[in-house]
Image 1 (spheres, rainbow, N blue to C red):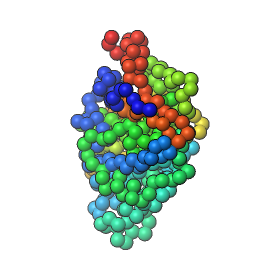
Image 2 (tube, rainbow, N blue to C red; image 1 turned 90 degrees about the horizontal axis):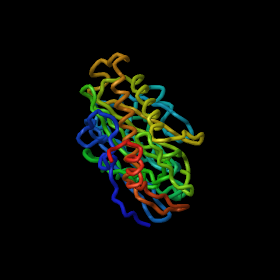
Image 3 (cartoon, rainbow, N blue to C red; image 1 turned 90 degrees about the vertical axis):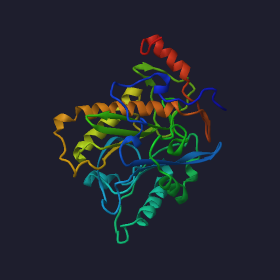
Image 4 (cartoon, one colour; image 1 turned 180 degrees about the vertical axis):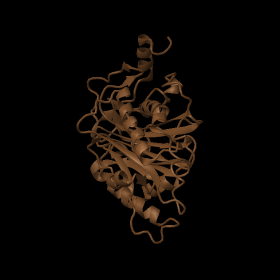
Length: 341
């Protein structure tokens, strides 16, 4: 099955979230020194999966960790490295996203990759961070097809600039809100800082765009795992506690697009800081964080919409996920007065 429509981002469809400006690519990579790489594993109809790597360049011989906050909206998930991250408020490795039962192989490969890097010749402990969602509707999740080579390719191929979205990397086999989900990204500029977001959408509910519900057909598939991973980066000088507050708002933003926050969902947000973030400049007062919270919620909302609008219809292992019909969305928005007729 193929789509007649072209994948387009929300803004390409005339759907704008909030009034804050975006970075040059409207992507996580607008945050200085943050790169993104994907490896897609596809053997239709059985396999639709992959790996997405978020790589902060600041991690290296001169800096072994970055401040990071974690918020768990619902903990039905397999977020490798979560307890040490929460305890110490720091990440020590790039962040990987993949499929549920591939998370553990990805974590082992991530450790191998980092230990082989400069400055880790004597490392005896390392906390890999790997998030996941369950792509078992469209991909044979039990096959655990992600290998060390796939992980290395995503890490080594990570680049700045525009980020591929939709059915790519860890979003290749995901579904969301009754439609085909995937990878989405967005950014906001606020108070001289950049907030960038990348999401892996795979959760249930009713798609809502600018406050207008866009229900899927009654026969639409329910996601296998009802989960969402949100990774946020910023050069705002926030400490780990403040980044945890930002991560909380990232999960809150899922409600804007219609998440029902099902009990079987793993909804996680990680927010990390890059230099000159905390440690280079004193963190601002908490009272000054409202603009960052606003930027976070707008960027997450737009990234989630991008993850669906750029995805394409996929025939998979145990069902089919249909792309969001752009013209239907635009018609409903015009009828509701949410966008100009």
